[in-house]
Length: 114
Length: 114
Image (cartoon, rainbow over all chains, first blue to last red; front, side, top):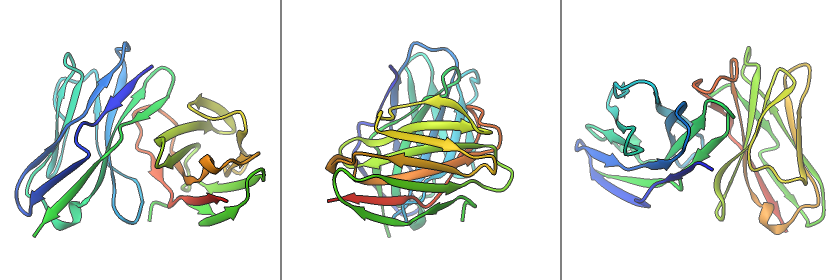
């Protein structure tokens, strides 16, 4: 079964600085999708960024980018120019293209200091 | 506001009881997903429906069942409730249910089993 590991339960960053959240996953599948979701205190789950496993190019969405290393099964999220509104729980997720099953990591709580 | 609605927002019940959680997807979305978020188990995918048919199954217990109706709303039925079923239950929707699609999450139903 696929597993997703987020080894950093908590991270802290100074406003305007850059922070990287780590995620590794384990799978024997070749076709899958990876996601980062944000959950602010409101508890609403919001998609931050997605990466298709077949694409070598790292996904970018404004201040958010990923470092996708398929061979190492690593999928880290970089947040540039951190803002107070970025403070939230961040979940890494894996979705199988075959079964549709979705697995989440345990989450990383990000604090942004003014 | 994601456009996904869930009712009720909060639910308090006793062990052994049965409850029904309701979800209305975004206008035009054909696929609905159910997730459970608890302190013990983290965020878990339960089940996905597409246009009334079950599409993918995750860690859904036999005591739990779901269905999607012709008007595309979905219900998650939880029976023989146990203390460990206390959690935040999310519904999400997407247009076609494909593995790469953005899923839009509802605000969740918080279930407390006493």
